[in-house]
Each structure stands twice: as C-alpha cells, then as structure tokens.
Length: 133
Figure 1 (cartoon, one colour):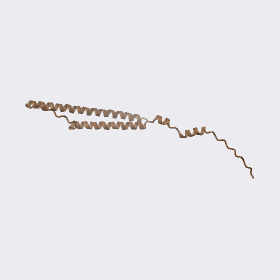
Figure 2 (cartoon, one colour):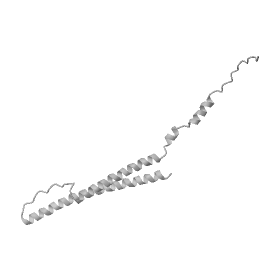
Figure 3 (cartoon, helix red, strand yellow):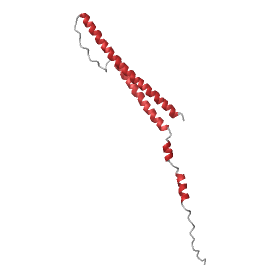
Figure 4 (cartoon, helix red, strand yellow):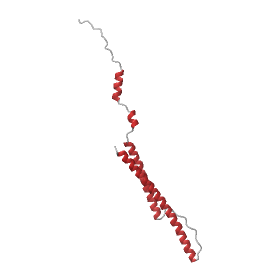
C-alpha cells in the first residue's frame, strides 16, 4: 500500500512547515527588538534636538504589540504542525505491517498438526473375547 509512504511525505511536510513557522517567530522577535532600539534612538535624537537630556531606553516587553501577537500566532501554528507531524507518524507506524510480529505468530492449526504427527498412533488394545453363551 502507498498510504504509509504518503503519510511519511505528509509528516515531512508538517515538520518543515513547523520549522519554518518557528524560524518566522524568531525573525519577528528579532525585528521587534530592532524596532524597539530604533525607536529609542529616534526618541533620543528628538530629545537631543530639543536640548533635553536623553532618557534610558525602556526595557522591551515581549508580550505587547502587533509583532508580539504575530509571534505568538506563529508559535501556535508551529506547535500545531508539530503535533500533526507526530500524529501522522504514529498513524504510519500503525499502518506499516510489522514483519517481526508476523514471524513470531504461528498458526495454531499448524501446531496442532505437528503435535498430532508427533504422537504415535495408539495400537488397538486387544480385548479378550468372552464366549458367547
């Protein structure tokens, strides 16, 4: 059957997609850090033009903003695709015939035949005949 091979192909696709989603989430995180730093530089430049002292840059909150939401969506997509890949792999394993199990199994009927052939046929026991009256 070609179904297990198709499932393996699907699993590979799910794995690649999950990895791409994970990488996209990391890129979004990096973009967020860069935008935060750029915003701090622009605010500092504006304060310098006005003659005010520069403030320290506020710490980036990774859970706020549009990029943070997009990042969390990408991470959820990645985990969903990873889950699909695992389920597909388990299904492919179920559908793949296990050669060792089929070899370990033996036919009960065949075993009975072997046992029957090993047994020696019983010789009929001669009973003394009684005289008929």
